[in-house]
Image (cartoon, rainbow, N blue to C red; front, side, top):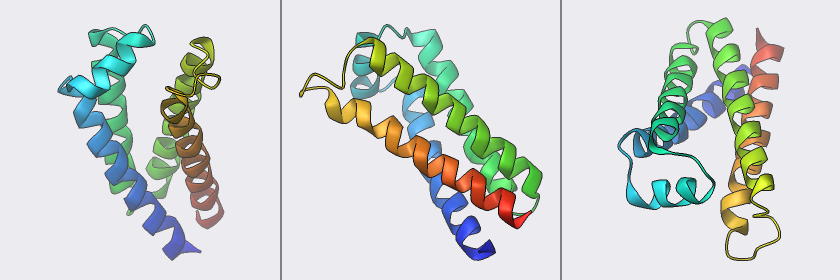
Length: 122
């Protein structure tokens, strides 16, 4: 189970490193969707910074498990907040925005699973 936790941690870290970089750099496709949700550029950069910090925490956590657990739990909470923004915008009922709304749900399940695996192997 330790191998599965480490592999999942590395994959999640890679996903959030890339996603966070897009937000910190304010790339157009990402910022357009966030602006639609009412998230300004300062908050977008803050979210990106938290995602990068979570990714780095997961990476370093390969050698120091408590940090990985905290990072995975933090990313899960961040994603729950994202789901809240999508719920407020009613994205789940609009076909055009549904894929944007489902992504944080799927990622929250994955990061939650990562947290549980890391806790089980600590």
